[in-house]
Image (cartoon, rainbow, N blue to C red; front, side, top):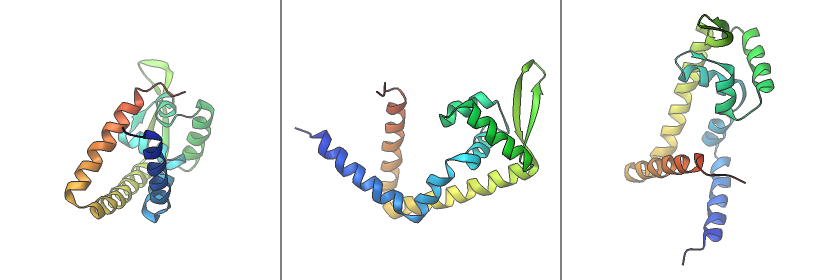
Length: 144
């Protein structure tokens, strides 16, 4: 019979070691803060509302507002009133923001491809399949 607690312990130990790897550290760090907001806007083809960013990142609207203020001061994003609903603000990328997001996306892709190549072709495909399944199942789980 499968002991899921023992398996969980092994998994957590592996993940702890995995997150100490330099490429994974850089990937994890980039999935937070301003770079993650830029990537969120970029992935939504350069237009997204702040509430959607808040939902994607799982953080408060106040924290998103502070991050957006910082990005706007740096000249990386724009804010425009939605012409169809004047209550909504649409976040877009400036050319500098788009350039930074594209460069960052390339960096993420290179580091991720490097890590996947360590597994070899078959294991890499299987790893992506399993982690995709895990992510899909996890989003529908009622976490307590």
